[in-house]
Length: 76
Image (cartoon, rainbow, N blue to C red; front, top):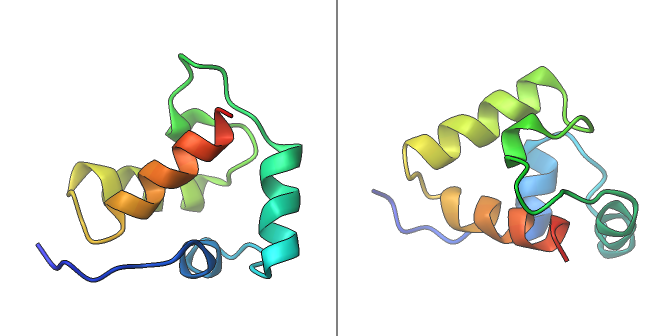
């Protein structure tokens, strides 16, 4: 496993989402997940985004930590 750190801005860029600090903050204000809803089933992600998130978590890739952080933010 590569231990490279990816900041939230890079995750948003990887997902094709607006990635400025204000845009990321707005995304988290606009989108929420129920405590029992899997991240990869979120209706606001495209199929391609869901696939990336699923693979990042399943492979425990260097993206997994920031994906976990995104998941936590969406539940706050």
